[in-house]
Length: 156
Image (cartoon, rainbow, N blue to C red; front, side, top):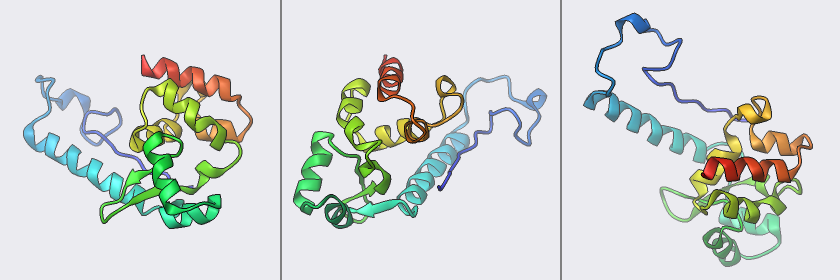
């Protein structure tokens, strides 16, 4: 599993000592620009990760057409993130039996069909799941009801 992380200059444990932190609670323009660049780099790296597939590959995996996959993405039936070149990239693991039936209810619970938001929810460790990601928790047998309750709580 690819794990990517972004560090903040304000996060505990960074090289800069907290006593040296500026008294202004706002980030500088340079810090904001660096954070935006790191976010863009994260998205590029995530889209190139080994578990991301094209709509053609997803169609083959699901036994359907690319047109249907695109319609599913638009309807929130599957997770697709806009590819920088064209089309979408999709996490292969969403077609697993532990995840697939949860996607539409998850869209409703989170109140969004945005691929990045869905991907972020499923891949971000949660204290409510003892530090596991919702995806890992599902794969290890945590009930979909618990994951959906967590999604509903995060949406509010």
